[in-house]
Amino acid sequence: MRPSKALGPVAVTALAAVLACAPFAQADTPDLDASLSGDGGKVIKLVAVPTQSAYLPLGVLGDSAPLGDEYVFADELFHDGTSVGSDGVVCTVFSTTPDLAQCEATLHLPKGDITLQGIAPLTEDFPSKFTFAITGGTGSYHNARGYLDGVNVSQTQTDLTLHLSK
Image (cartoon, rainbow, N blue to C red):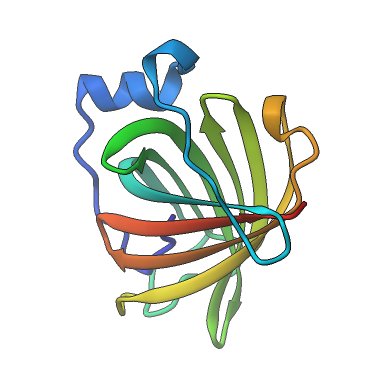
């Protein structure tokens, strides 16, 4: 999940398009291993790999993204090297000093969705870190609360650690 000042085009294959849009059957995907955290909650580790992206400029391009510009993207989500779902993210630039965006995301996993919200830096420097609040969910995650720690390792990988509260 990487807002960036210079989002380049991402090659989209037919497989990536299917993965980003199709629901995942529980029988076809592994159960997500979740370890217990210190507070009795669960921790889930995922890796996000981009499948689609678009930059929607509000104004003239310059060194900084103008206020109101949006980054919209989707990732395929992996757990222990196996595809387990997808995400959809929309980030809106709200500050140019420093460059920051307000992001809303949904993780689509085999047993339900998890919704997220938070602020991410707009940077081309890696690694870059961000933390989002878990704001809710569906299915097995219908009472989801907690937070997500993210690390943009590169333009092609983001490490995600979900901390689900008990």
